[in-house]
Length: 255
Image (cartoon, rainbow, N blue to C red; front, side, top):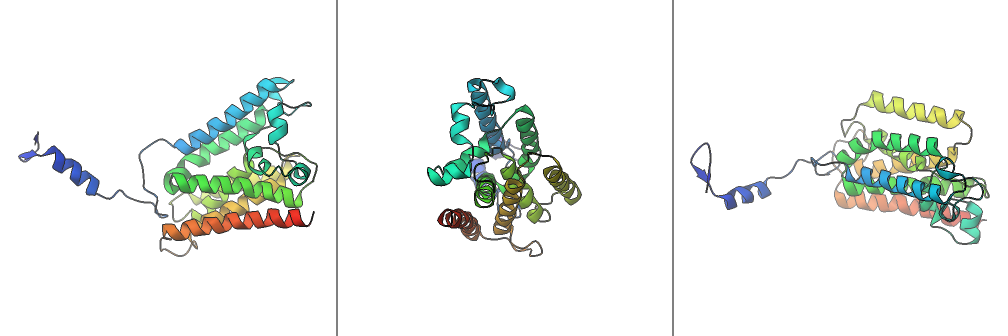
């Protein structure tokens, strides 16, 4: 027995009562957990580890893993549409999202992920957040594969990060995010996308569109207050994945 303000409580009864209390959920049905953003931390760690590894292998060191000749991992993982098609290297559609060309590239992307990732992960939950990130990464790569330069290499996590921006915009009201702050961040990133040379516009646009579609699958229309059931959310995300695969398949068939 444990002393309480009124009498004594049985420890088993206290634990049973705690288990029976439902944890609060967000507008998309995710449990609100008081824990670090483990998925965001893991994604940042994977990107940094890949960068360190390619930097160690590169003849130009950590500041330029993409310098010719690039590291063996960089050479295998970067997205080159011609290689994806000719050698069936479809894994590059995802692996390229974990590579970065230089220190500024990875620093800016990881900073953006560190800003948007934790609040969105807390509100979406881990499996929904992970799904949006990976789908957006594939969406950005699919846009490059379908409409980009067939021999131009592309790397970076920015397509996935723009997908997080797209999902957040669709869910901004339902998740209680600050719309002015979010719109300002998105506008700034698109201005940089179209004003700084060397940035993959297709990758950013493809990731953003797929992320917005994923946000729609999770939250429904912005002006509808009903929560989308988890089964419908999963089906919607599967539909977004199918759309990305169709884009890749059509491009492959019409090469």
